[in-house]
Image (cartoon, rainbow, N blue to C red):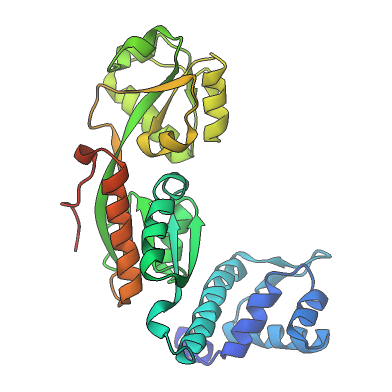
Length: 318
């Protein structure tokens, strides 16, 4: 049975993927059909045949508006990426200056997108001014799936698993720092210990992974810290600090773009309290020169904007 499904699904056409990709972006088949300039029954039949070929249900039809199933959402990401790649390839064939035209995509953490990516992209566009760039600022889990599914050319993430399908390179060690109000008594210190933090009102902020890292670390240090606030958005956490409601702890990359005049960042005594920023891509993917150059631009941007001692490129699984 598995062998039969694989053989049938391998016969999917670009047109089928294009129709599905468009349908996945609209709330009804009628609107999608207008976009494709075909009739609604024609589109419905094409989707039904696609589902039959794949032996999968791609849309949940129990509601008035279309909703993708879990399988449909994953296929939509891949289909949209393949269609964009196919269209970009066709354009490049007809482009007399194809060496300077094209498209690349990447998945990066929001902290990198706000701090490092602008410099790296600016450097890249000096050499490839007509390139189309898709910057997906996303969480670690989604970014990893997109790299594995070939939706993006590479990712800038943390905690990449050691898989044979991946190549990863640690290019930056992002140390955690405490952020306090300038009027706080702690603002006079050059370094904070966990004992300094223990008696303060602590605001946990950021993604679940960041908050989990912080809680794990202070638990290992033997201190008892009970957060007074717990929020997801960095700006919310920093606003609470700015209002004098406590201190927060964040990776260094969040700070340059988020700090305001009444806040100051202080290093934590535990110098090994950090997260590794990793550049990852599929091991079986041959990267074209522009993608390789963009990756180099990120390395250069990290080295240019961040303290020299925090940048390193020695650890990788290449």
